[in-house]
Image (cartoon, rainbow, N blue to C red):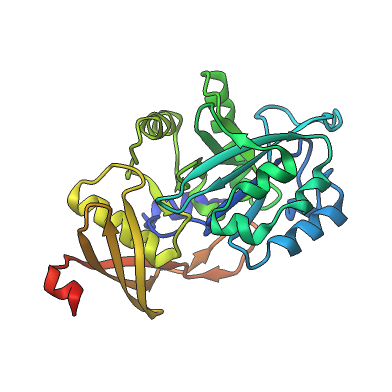
Length: 313
């Protein structure tokens, strides 16, 4: 029986513009098994999980659980757990970390402020500090959501860890099971699909140099899906690899067609036409369902650099 990943790859489904959307990521270490809805179906207190979901709702903050790669037999929860917060909007990209013995302290965070990119609350509530280690590579491995994430994600995470990649963690959910193995790289927040160990290492090396690898990239979580596709299209068109230099400053229109304005820190602007299409033929979007669907795809129709006169009009 074919998996959703096999079908997606065979049909050459495009991955640009498919990343999860989150201006800010909040990650809590939680070893042990995870259920499909990990915040309320793991060894984390489900009441706390529900409260965290409610606190983050509508703030631009996305919460996920993380654990180190390896076997996940139930050996209990460590007394101290790692917590990360990362903001991905260009011009204010940061990654902070903390240790806590009381995960309920996360409820003391000002989620609205975190979503806006203010890290002060992370420092006040959790004594968080800027992360000084390697960038993070978060590999989705939650087989309870989709078996592809376990079958393909866990071996990737294990291979990366065994080869000395310091920042690799397993994560509960990044969306897009059919693009497994899926990886989110922080602090810049770019997601990758159909990832292999050598490409992830290249991506991480690029991040350390302030560079974004476009190949295999699903988009930046800072933007909605049309913006993700538009920003990647501009990077490709002008061969721009520098991180933190492109921003989606305006999106006009609605599905199935948008006009997206992408700006460079050097003053250049581009108008990108993005059309929503359907990936055909119909197929299951996840191994967890037998329902056939036609996943939405973001097709870039045109990329045009704007003149000063066009910007002024």
